[in-house]
Image (tube, rainbow, N blue to C red; front, side):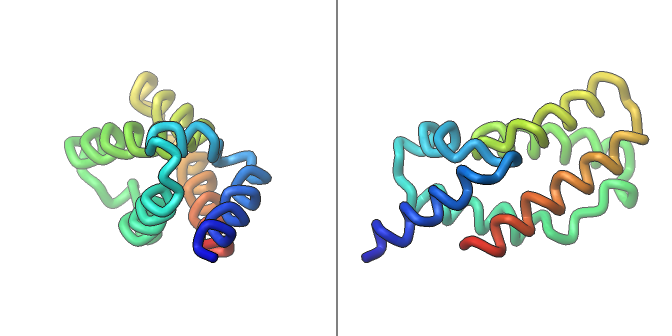
Length: 112
């Protein structure tokens, strides 16, 4: 039964332009239970994240960590926004980041 639930979640996430589930599952050796567990932790740790409240050092560290995790989870658009923020040091892009993060968290919470 768990496999069916996990497969349904996978199919739901595949419909999200924010998450490439196949890529994420590849990094987790197709272990959907572990992938879903990490997605849930991602939500728990980041649903109240506000980059504007961070110092420059905290911002850089947080972005670097999130870039790796987002990439591993298959969150390609979020990863791209983070790379742009890091490269251009453009705080205007933080609004794009916040919007994309919010959409991803909403998608995960509605499915998992």
